[in-house]
Image 1 (spheres, rainbow over the protein chains, first blue to last red):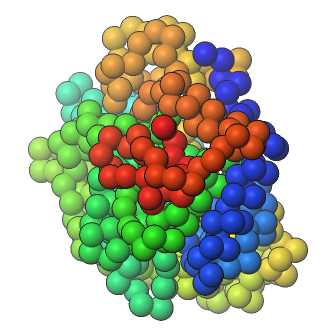
Image 2: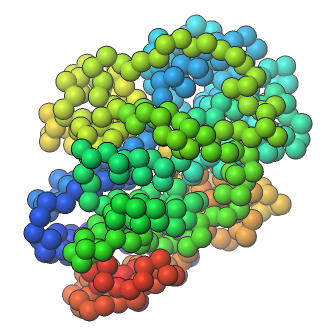
Length: 369
Length: 100
Ligand code: SF4
């Protein structure tokens, strides 16, 4: 199978036919409908392909809390930066985090002050650094949802079994279904349905959203990332809304199995246990974080280094918190496109390649400025 | 950051594999996807294979788009959803089910 079949998910005639169908489905609803795209990769795809502007007038797509870098609380970022500044430490992180401003400084500035900060593409690279630098402590900043957390769990398990004691992780992972139920309890948000993340669900499986459907009656469709995937998913959501039904449905059938990835989830649960976690914008959500279990305490940076990062707060004037919860859009931020641009980001939503402000700035500026 | 891209496994040795993406090869771990084998297409995320790409499902979805684009798609009546029990019957899908 050549991967050229992917082109079929972008083909103009397919996209147009789906858009026509979506217009009919949306018109049949005869009321305004708000659908939240939970995942930052969806936000980027929707902005890049101009889907948000092309939607039927009564259909609104609201960007949600699905950018892992963006939802990481400043308190966690500040803690990691304090750790990076310690002697004998090599701080490793995924690329986007480097330019996120913390309360007092970002990682890039910490680097300017002598911290050793290395960007890695994978925890496998961080493990390699740990092997090559036995005299240093390698601290990996564990951020990300259930797509990423199993890859960090795999690294911790490997470090543990091979006695690589200088590999440590600061775990600031978050779990998606908990955030959705927390959002459902925010009355101001008033969303009618969720476009659910394809790759998180490849891990957790579609049934992870059963509570959203059962407790809040909101339709959930798990979507792929190509334009045709997104449009088909919106049609499926309109179909559920039309008959007043809420269920979990799967559009991204080529990437997601009905039981998710049980191997990855078993490893995640072997290494991590649920804990309360602070999200930027959403505050503390009980049980939405992942703490390193006692068996792997030797690899837990939070236990190993007692640092005091002081008082953490949000950048002045930045609305990221409200944007991450769908209550505001980037255009409502006075700094957007003025003091805050991808070259000079004030908040994380403008830094990350999946951040809502960055997506709007790059692709939707005409609409919001 | 939850980006995952399709890649082909071109060699595999225990839990380490080499995958090909757009003509480039890269190292990958298949520890999260022990069923993956030589020649499989997988979704890669942060150096790990996380899911198999199901070709039949992909083609099924494309066939549906083609019907819709070609105007031969009726799509009104109830349909099977092909969701393995996730969705108990076609009404929620406006006739646009990924599998028939
Ligand atoms: S535009 Fe900049 S300052 Fe405003 S909310 Fe977005 S990231 Fe924050």
